[in-house]
Length: 155
Image (cartoon, rainbow, N blue to C red; front, side, top):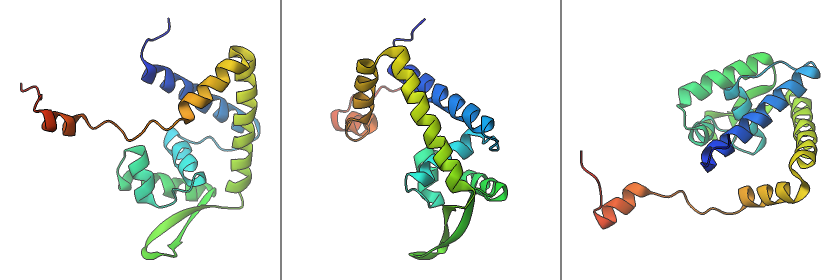
């Protein structure tokens, strides 16, 4: 049964892609990454290389990100190096092993996108990409709105 809630559908789509990417990567002999490592890798590839940025994006603590990045460095797919703009912190960069792993993950996404178009149709896929890629604006701040209109519910 389809859920009427958008967030459930978006999460199911994320899990579908994540599961497919993991399967594709294992079929190519790559190590299996945890969800945290996979999400950190996506952030690094998209330019969020500082642990504080990754933590903010994922909604987890810097300590949790540090553990995740340390695990990824042990696997050999990233290295932590001094941030050239702030020597007090480190940044995560892909290694010679991490770069081809990233390329294979992109190939997986391309293949999965092609197959999704076959399953749901190109117009539906184009609409999905357009809707998810649209500027949704800033997140809605219900707390601020409640303070402005004094409509808070008190327990």
